Image (cartoon, rainbow, N blue to C red; front, side, top):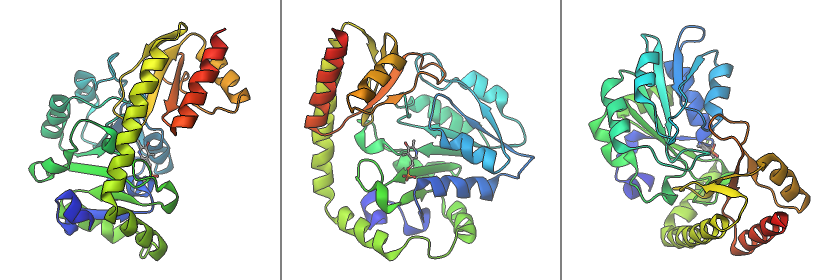
Length: 288
Ligand SMILES: *Cc1c(COP(=O)(O)O)cnc(C)c1O
């Protein structure tokens, strides 16, 4: 069903117990502990670093440019004979932007190892998935998940799309029967209601635009970053303090201020209309 919806062959798909499991399989299949390295581009999803550490793989971090785009020159400087995977999270968590097509192409064309594009948030983006380019790049690996736009984080289903050769290798090392029948049932049900999901996404995008407009009006907010995801990164005066104040009001956002390039930022997830209105109201009150 996924193959038909996504326009790929079933042999180009591997399912995992969440996309975090897929990412771990990639480390175990392609990187030798204590020898190889990977490249990640902070500020980004924290799991690449955790999995690298767990698998005893060096994580060479190349900080994004100030516009949150990959620093190509520095990436190519960091690549050596032991660099096996470059992780590109696009749309990126927590910055919310998508990486420029030309930059991703350049990396795919110039790097001999795997380029993993983590598309956990692609369904919220106005840009197309890299899936339709799968045949073009033998080193391209794409991960997606049922946990975000599909609203099924609890069923734990992650998806990896790659060449048949890569998928065959991953299938050899994955635990047997790890996608349980209840998960499969739920996901099949959800996939068949494709149109419902599309409508939910449309509603969320409208809420996102509304929230961005409201946030931009607040005096203490310095920057509302553009978003291709279901969250908004916002720079504001004394974000750690605002985070604590919101917490006291029962509103939980993510304080990203400790991450590189993210000083004084909160990452706000777009919720239900009621939750969003409440967040805006509480933030306005902090302003007084
Ligand atoms: C949430 C998230 C994932 C993990 O999703 P699961 O399928 O629930 O494991 C992977 N990558 C990014 C960038 C995410 O934000």
